[in-house]
Image (cartoon, rainbow, N blue to C red; front, side):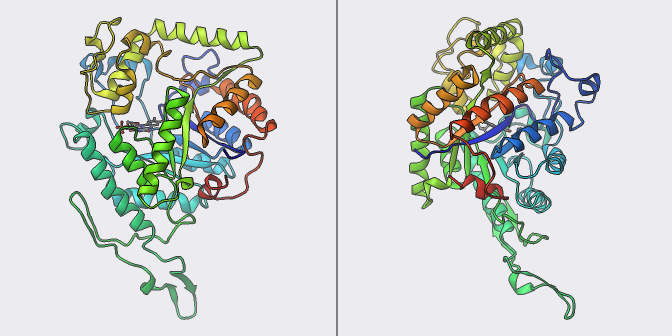
Amino acid sequence: MKDHFHLAWFLSQGYGPKTWRSQWPGSSSDLKRWMMPDLFIDLARGLDRCCFDYMIIEDSSMVPYTYRGSHDTYLKYAASSPKLDPAVLVSYLAQATRTLGLVPTLSTSEYPPYLAARLINTLDHVTEGRIGWNCVTSSNDGAAENYGHDTQRPHDERYDVADEFAEIVTGLWEAWEPDAVVLDRESPVFADGSKVHPIDYEGKYFKCRGPLNAPRSPQGRVPICQAGGSPRGQAFASRWADTIITNALTVEGMKKFREDVRERAIGWGRDPDGIKVLFLACPIVDSTAEAARERRRLLAEEDGRHLDLNLSGLSRLTNIDFAKFDLDEPLPASLTTNGHQSSLANWIGKTPRALATGNSRQGIEFVGTPDGVAGRMQEIMQEVGGDGFLIFNTYFDRRYVMEICDGLVPELQRRGLVRKAYAHRHLRDNLLEF
Ligand SMILES: Cc1cc2nc3c(=O)[nH]c(=O)nc-3n(C[C@H](O)[C@H](O)[C@H](O)COP(=O)(O)O)c2cc1C
């Protein structure tokens, strides 16, 4: 494998309240004014300092009500709701950082493609090339109902829609040739019309004339991030993604996923090294391994006290009301979903209680001292062959940011596993650096 691997951060549950139940909740203004960008700015500054490739901001577009047919549990815990618009947060984060890549989520099931292309292009202009796009298909029927539909389209068809969407968006991003803007004050010629092209797209789901009403942005084709895990999702991701994020439960699973994606990319005529596969990891680091294990135990205990919180999360991702299952009966193999199919596939055979207490859901554990966890990450990357990790923690607060940015990452840097300085200004170039 290559000497270095990549690091990114997953802002789980998006631009919403984060620390309000933590023992380290921040000041009272942090708590009440969760909608202000302060905590997220501190996070982004930490990641910029540690030279992370990017920070991705999760998003969804509804107050869910899948669990028990009611939104009460979600609102009680601020679980998946409220959430503010990630693209707005990005502009604040960009002001506060220098090089960190910023990746908002915009759903192909909700945006019209032209609007998405325009928003991302604008963000890439104002960040001078630091934007990525987390290109998702929405899965929860509650979101479909907010956009004029009764349910989401069938799972695989959502990716057919997304294919057309991505064709339009990337076409619009490249509709202005790189030298279309002339800026000749004498003639005058602001832009050369012969170098700006309509895309005249007509598909099954979308129609778009183009061109975009804005010039090519610094990265032109902005890096696309994707998390499709089902066979259809992987086919989509390996066609379009520059970085794929995924939750593999075992080292063998990680290796296989990465090999499959690379194989599929070759099938699309792509260089497999152009796709960086990052695996979710939720490290818990402390001064001693015992202290870290105790933290892990306390988190599981906390999960056990609020089973309804995690069951509501499982319900939201699958459109299946988990309240109907016996907590201690393994989920039957016959269960199907029109939601996150790859997630459900990982859960079959496990009990709702085990899933809700987190242990069987999160996959590989990274619990120990910074040195111990860094060593484990090193071993795993060597076995998998690359490309890196996507760090996240559902119990996210400033303390956690510090433990990663001032504890774990310096240890990874000391071992020569992650970068100590950015080599480039653009997200795409940093992704392709190694
Ligand atoms: C790390 C990670 C982040 C994700 N972020 C989002 C998100 O922000 N919004 C969203 O609607 N789906 C998100 N998803 C869901 C994926 O887009 C996808 O629907 C899911 O992985 C299931 O894929 P499949 O339908 O191909 O099985 C995320 C998935 C993963 C693993």
